[in-house]
Each structure stands twice: as C-alpha cells, then as structure tokens.
Length: 440
Image 1 (cartoon, helix red, strand yellow):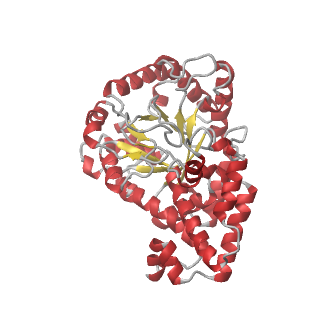
Image 2 (cartoon, rainbow, N blue to C red):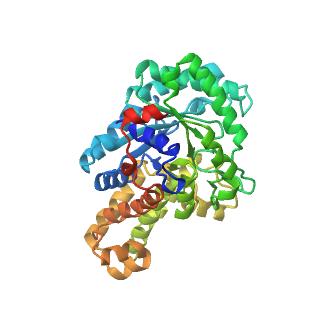
Image 3 (cartoon, rainbow, N blue to C red):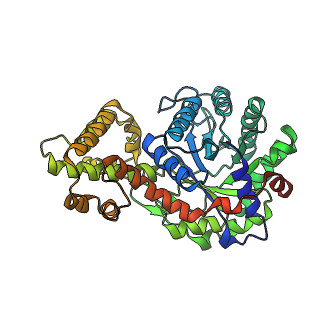
C-alpha cells in the first residue's frame, strides 16, 4: 500500500496543464460486507486501478465495532479476499473514516479522546494509509458542535499518535463540516454547501497547529478537506449535486495548494452529477450504503424468483424482518412513521439500515440457503427477466454467468462502474512521487 495515488490526485488538481474537464478522482468504498469488498477487489484486479476501501470508526475499532473487527482484522479480511480474487496487494488502499471520539462521545472529553487515540494507533499499526481525522463532535458536557480551534487541536493529537507508531505512512483528511455517517434522517430541504470562508478557516487553523506541532513534512501529507458540496441522501429522498450552488466553494480550491476536497454521502448520485463533482475538485467520493442497497436489491430479486420456484419456503425478506424487529437498535431512531411505513423503510430506505443486519448468523444462514436452493433449481429466463431484468440482459449477452452469487456481485459492480466512469482512469495521470512532492 502506498500514498502515491493520493498525491497524484493532489498534483493534478493544481497542475495548470490538467484542465478541470480532465481531472481524475478516486471512489472510496465504505463497506465491510464481504460481497461488496469482493466486487470492488475483482474490479481492481480486472482494471489494474487502485481501489480505496475504508472502515468507519463505528464499524471497526480497537473494541471491535459493530462488525466485531479490529483494524488488523479488517485489513486481513480485505487482503484475504484480494488474494482469492487475484487482486495485487499494491492496488489495495486502506482508509479509516471518521476517526475520532464519535463512538465514545457519551464519555467525558478526555476519556473519549483517550479511546480515539488508541483507535487511530490501531489503524496506523495495521497499515492504513488514509486517515480521516474527525473530532468535530462534542462529548459529554460539551456542545454538539465544537469550536474550530478545539477540533483542530484534537485532530492534531490524533495525527501525532498515528505518526508516533507509523511515521510517514499515511495521508490525512481534515474538515469539520462532516455529513451524518450513513445519511441524514431529516427532510433534505435546507442543505447548503460549505462556504469558502469556512473551508479556508478550517484549513488555516489546522495548518498552523500541524506545522507547529508535527512539522512541515507532516503537513504536506494533510491533503484534503471534507466539505459539504450540497449532496446528501435521506431515508426516501436525496439531493443531486447543484453545480452553480457549489461554484464559490469549488473556486476556493485554487487558493488551497496541496489540497483536494472529499465528498461524503455521494450515494445514489447520477453519473453526470458525480462527474461534475470530480471536475469541480471533489476528487474523493465516498460511497457505502448505495453499494449494500444494490446488494439487497439483488438478494430480494433472487428471493422473488425462489418464491415462484419454491412457494412454501420462508422468504429472505421475512427472515430479515424478524431479525430487525427483534433487534431494533440499528434502525429505531432513524426511521419514523406508522408501523406499515416502518416496515417498508426497514427494507427499502435509502439509508439502508438493513446493512447492519447481514452479519447476523440467522441472516447469513438465510442468504446461504437462498443461494444454495437457487443453484439447485436454476434461474429460468422468464423469472430473471421479471425480477432481475438488468442482470437478465447481461446473462443473455454472455457477459454474466447464470449463478446467484455472480448476479449479486454484478449488481454491486454496476454501482462501482458508475463511480469509475465519473472518476476516470487514475493511472493515466500517474506522476512519479518525487515530482509530486516537488509540486505540493
């Protein structure tokens, strides 16, 4: 794993020889689902392009997170799948997202930060090369939104801990205007892009502290800011990127040498919007729930086929409904409405809270049974056409094997393909690291 692809992004963002229309970006796959990871790694193996895979602080941490994995466990999972699908290890870039006190924000500030410091140390020791420093949330006894100075001080402490165990290994992303992980719960009628003034202030405060505390060399590896370009998704709606609204923010990047913008919650954006984001300097595009949403669509399509072929078999949807109602912690508080509305949102909401339940043993068994039964029954053309028409067309064209597992991987890959089209081919702009450092 190398930081060179990130430095390439920075270089071309500020290279006058590279017009905005030719900018390349990099998608960030934010998922721990093995099938999503497999699809992403298969694509990297096929295209020879680097793949960025990130774990969030709630998902993976030194205590296990909701996946039960430490950073080292997650690394081993990813690299194990990479080996199985013949993806060269040098193409795999691992990142940590929202690294800060968020999982422990109910604790007093010092206790929460102590846990956060242990977490980023674990990520650094495990070899993660992109670390998002997010100390923007208040802890017990603090306001929900903290002053920029406090956020920067805590971010600097986090970077200092990472550097103490793995000096020079990682690039860092900063920024305090961070969208809610996993999508917004409220109606999206007031979303506004980050102001250029706020972005500049964030950068200036962090730069002053980092240069003073960690030195100029470390600061050159702080390569990006998380800002709000005006994109978000909620439970049932989403906001498509409005280029004119973000024009002033995009133009500000020209006055920020050595920096790029990172956009979170880009899930469900159409291809033209994603491409516009890249051209406007938002070169790191996060996608997570949109990938497991596609996975769930494929699974439920296969489940519908089985319901015709084996009509008395309990459906996968019924199993997932039982699991989610018995264990509501991951969706309650995120969905609102009467019971019939909640039943729809649990399965089909854009925020895809069902993704937290696929690792449950009963869910894994139900999926395994579904795939095994469909391997035995086969997948008749008329039913594929009815319930999985996109995959049906690919199977008919000889582009996709007629197997349930391949169909699921294809559904995830279709989302990744949109991001690859939006981001372009990074290798075409590869710049030798020595030249990159001389520019930034």
